[in-house]
Length: 336
Image (cartoon, rainbow, N blue to C red; front, side):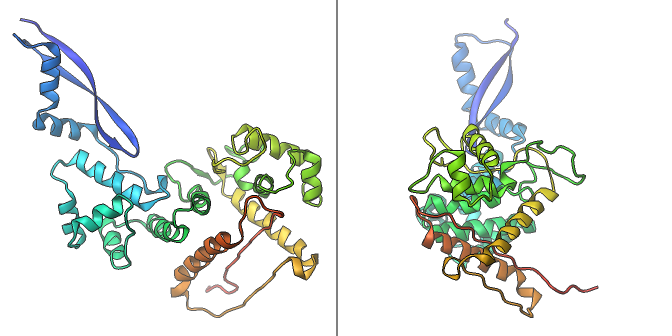
């Protein structure tokens, strides 16, 4: 009689765009007329054993903040459910959603159609997202439809996805200033990093600190321009030829909650300086409104949709100038 433990790595399922590898210890007390390979294969083709292995995996559900296309999220959620409950199927899913057509759901997951407005509430009821997750899910749907598959417009979603308040699993916001901060200040919270990166799309762009500083009318000096150019290249945001890559500027590690606040203050300072520009080169508009606060969420969604449509209309690579679009919508009064 032979007795030992076999350790075998087995690719069970694809979850979150990555294969999950598990290790199973199989105790073999004896085998006669069976090769080691056949014993292992028999183990992993037995549905009962697969169920036991699936349960042992303790697979985590996909995080919605890791996605910029809601259909990828739905597809990976289905794989996750199938890996943890072998009875799960598209037929069962549509019954829980209160839908009638399996093909409608599978076509959405396969990116052959979009989710209709009558289907969205059913998915929200099924998932029971917390507020921030629900907002991200809805925004994915809106932006994917508005962008019509244009990857440049999806950068807007990816930048929002990188916000520290949205990525709870990846980024922890530090309450005390100075604790865990990047000594060089992160690129994601500096307007200059976006300005220099966008300038790389200009027809006359030169990867030269002097040229960058002059084109920005001194808003960044030569030293700052050189620093941004170097960091953008070292982090793969601009390639060796001086052109922007597809990589998105994201937060790294921990950061103070004051960092994004400082970033927006600096942008507003740039807006204040724009008052002196010739009127034909800028647009400054403002409205003061008494509103129904119940419509606040809808108003913010409308602003976001405008941002996407605006970018779709005016953005061009190569371009001839870099512009800044800022939008602020905030209360002047507060209840005490």
